[in-house]
Image (cartoon, rainbow, N blue to C red; front, side, top):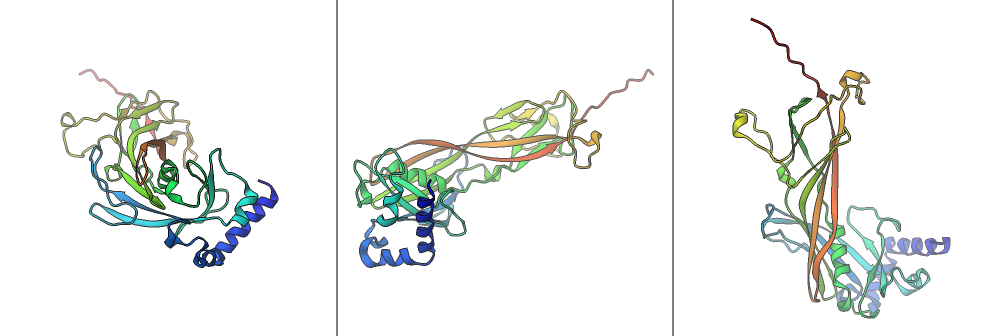
Length: 295
């Protein structure tokens, strides 16, 4: 982007922060009340279990099983700022300024977005591409990072399976709805699998969140579909205290979220690109030697 365009966008953002664009909207050339200049996005979390059909409230409308979150507002960029920018995509559309409560956005990370319209550019957002609205909804979903559990918990042992799991409290669907004019689209992100990078060069993929180990329950009464067996110790790996014998493998868990969408006010629905969240821990792996005695 040229310096001139950066200046134009920065100026537009300044005007927005000073209320100039709000005044522009209020004068009738693009008011929120006419359904033609703003897009509101509300996010909410669902309490449904994996595989369940119900989701919580979306779009900040309230309802059982969910709680509404902050809404992002997309305001049509006035022509005097939009024209110098030119088109922002291969299909017709318009530039919008984005404001989200509690989030700091810049022209480089989402404060200025191009929203495609179909079949031709029009001030009437009822003809907006519903998939573009669904993508905005998906962008507004706040997904949790994995909360990792392992057993043995203090350290793992070579040739002994290490149980791996993700806290089940976050293993459910999250959804958000975006509305543009008469078109609404809901995006739903559902946890699909966990990819475990075990730090020794190997990767384990588990279809679900795994099973937590229950202390006090006989081992024969427990089982898991998500575990990994180290074949060597972590001696010599980086350690917090710099002592080689305290080395640990860096383990990363990445949840892949499958995202689907539906719409009202326009035909549409299907699959969106997957989302991912990641977190890491360190696992120390020891080599335990057995000693046999004659007697």
